[in-house]
Amino acid sequence: MALKQSMNLSQNLVITPQLQQAIKLLQMSRMELESAVHAELEENPILEEANDLKEEDLLRTKEASAEVGNEAESLDQSSQDPQKQDEFEWESYLESNQKPPSSGMAGSEEIMNYENVITTSQTLHDYLYWQVKMHGFNEEEERIADVLIGYIDDDGYIKTPFQQISDEEKIPLQDLEDVLSLIHEFDPPGVGARDLKECLLVQAKHLEEDTQDLVHLITHHIKDLEKKNFEAIAKALNKDIREIAEICKIIYAMEPKPGRAYVTNDTHYVSPDVYVYKVGDDYVVSLNEDGLPRLKISNFYKNMLKGGSTNKKEQEYIQEKVKSAVWLIKSIHQRQRTIYKVAESIVKHQRDFFEKGAGHLKPMVLRDIANDIGMHESTVSRVTTSKYVHTPQGIYELKYFFNSGINSSDGGDALASESVKLKIKDLVSKESAKNPLSDQKIAELLTKDGVQIARRTVAKYREMLKILPSSQRKKFF
Image (cartoon, rainbow, N blue to C red; front, side, top):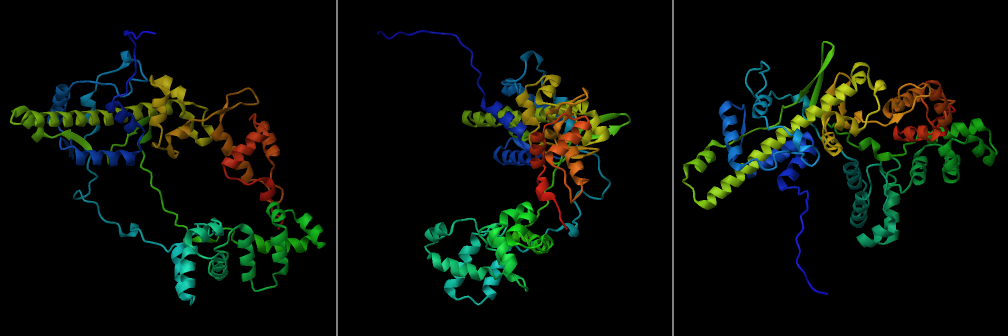
């Protein structure tokens, strides 16, 4: 077999580093974008942040763009027809980055609101460590207690097997057991348990009354307690069902997650990327530019490049940084334009939602928006990731508006899955506590209401809504 040389012509799609950066910026959340821009401002001396972009800033950036060339002009060329690409609109970039009108407050500094100062709260572990200090442990017991507390999760349980803790911490297994029995005397009751049964048993021992029946029920009938199968428990213990119900009241009043009271529920603030306002009979889409840095090219370095006072190496460095700066400015502006287009299309497709609420959400997939605005589905998917819109109905993630459809039993338009979930939630909220609706019954009620849905689909949606099965929702007292 002889070795031969041959030539062939082929086309390959190459994703340049600049295009990779543009795609990455497109799928970033608002906070991630701000962090990325600030990081670039620190690394690139050509980039500057302006309080208000002026005409000369625009002119300088356009000149820099012309000098470094227009390679990879499109930010999503892999997903759109090249014939449909439009030139970068510098005037649009200037208009969208103008400083918003003054709010009328004297000065530009924000007034400190001391009512909103965040305070620290005591954690479960801090509380347990404090109790160790107050309990009078010897040095060795205190060391082991500190180790065990470190393995307690936010719910108050120790999920790690004791043998593993013994091997990792080089502590005898019996010593761990002995100290754990002391931790079980701590507050909150049940903390340090290894499973639900042990948690309930510890709490039962804290009660100042006869706990023999409680301990027996928790030890031998935990599954029946979970299903509220009082008949089976009463039959097994040969007792009246009313007596069993009274005992179970005490158990159901116990805390299955002792550490829950010490979990800090930090408030997560969402800054919307888009605002939707109703003006007359129409809905207007407005981008939220507040907080996004307004970028421009440094005049100092631009003059250095023009003046010719730099050597070849310095010129290459400045040109490279100018190219990076221009590309970042274009990428951010194109990102904002794409978000605007997607949001505008969503408003057009989901007008009933903006008028009447979530119950009128229509089935919609990424392809519907992609076809409407002439972009690829992957571009729409990136745009809707971690982006939020402020609407007259509240703040929603853009992905919220994409739902599969459930057929209508009367031959009408299909319903969005999110609307069906709301119907299930509403039915459960109105049910009788002593006779809750089964999944089959909910499916039958929805069918009468014009929603063609199977029992297993109801069960799936119920689990997504974190609603317990009917057997566990039933209340006997």
